[in-house]
Image: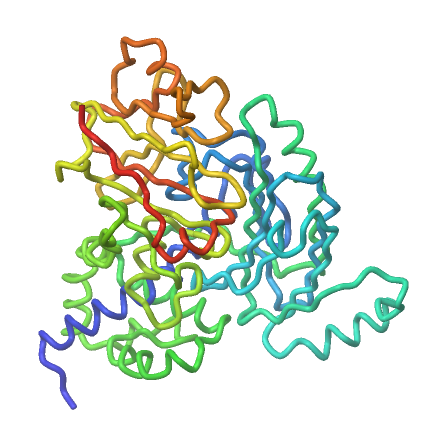
Length: 441
């Protein structure tokens, strides 16, 4: 059946949305492989620890946090199982290690919520690799009851993004966070040499299809994607076919060229909308982090919050307008008051300030006091007589001394606030807990 131009345009838009998270993870990986500074370059199956708190210069990932230090690794399971070990942590310190697939799903997790202080050892194997892992365990004596228990995790594909978070309570706490990072190890066979120097042009449909198809070939799509992929094959999105573009008719290529420039705008339209009862806050749906067939949401999070955790681990809420409906802007002044009881959680919370790029990504904004986040661990905050906390949100320093202590600096233009709540209780996860709105003053 021959598709009309309008039908082809719709199919190409849907194929782009489907493939964008795969592209975005591949782009992030390539940026690490191609880092010009050898000290920050990351080879496959090698760890990289970020030793400093995130600030306005952190641009390798969108919507970074200022609550934890990151550690990351690009695992390649094609050469055999990869073992990940975490030493015992100090009590009361949050940590988590997420394992993401090529589609940006958190397919496995270890950390405080599941493992307490640890220690933990897991062995990641590629699709169908459990038997090989069992044979390896026997050969190495890991079936000895006196050996540490090693959990085998079968990954859905050969490419895994290890993404770890370690709590840090400000600059003075960095040595403790660094010590936590040192307790993480990756033990792996030599990976195939990486291909370096691959340019990533988000408006080149030929490259987009080549990159996405290559990653899909290494990371088999789930059966639930079968119907969508059958439809996308007509426009060149075919797992494993890196030369699909060469065989597309000129008519389809031309429509790809026309449509791909609108891709980020199309994805932004899929961002979650404010939920009722939460004063304008956008609380992400419960399948964040494991998206199933919700391809638009998966793409929106890849654009605006790549590597987001599942709600059971952390709830994210974003806000772009005040209670009066006006978009948040540095030309106005705002207040956010958290009541004495705080938020229903078993971890910690933070409120972060972001400026928006033209394509919809969020990054910390430069400010004179180097404060990008305020939370329940921020030192020197003033609470009112009842124990409540009022945060001053504005571009210029407040005149009042108390407000200055509680100041979250804003940029001169528009901005977005993101509230993070780690280890949230059910009321927060399910959206029944009230989140105060931002009031213009």
